Image 1 (spheres, rainbow, N blue to C red):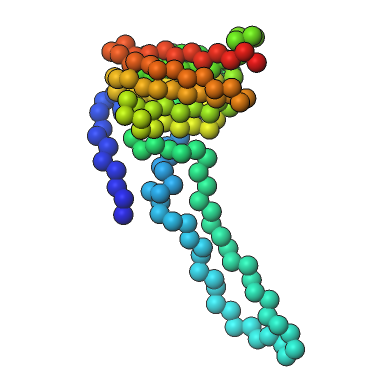
Image 2: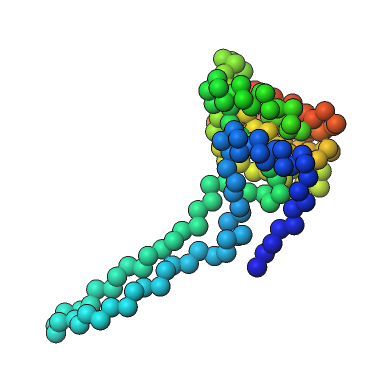
Length: 175
């Protein structure tokens, strides 16, 4: 059995509560639940008539579907669609060290559906999302990070530094 050691700090607790309050959801990595298994077939005692071949029943399959690769220990908030959601995220932004927004530079409209990857100084992935935006906030310690954001085939990259006051990173595509 795999277990995660996660130190509960007041900042992480506040961030988790804020994420849940804004419609976020808790998720665990696919490997934490163990392998997907099919339920045991029910025993039947029906006889096959002579000259007929028994039809095998297709097994029930339980699939393990991961919508995005969760990096254990990283807490994030993704959203900002609609004026109410955007206002709530702006109100809570000061609690998140890394605050990213994604927009179309030509129309100055927010965009979603961004493929986002955040790497630490050692090159280890700390966050991977297949459908980020228009606003993504991440709980990360101070330090150096490399961010790649792809939208409609165009990739933007940034090296960022998260300091004591956090970091606002804005990604603008000309579409």
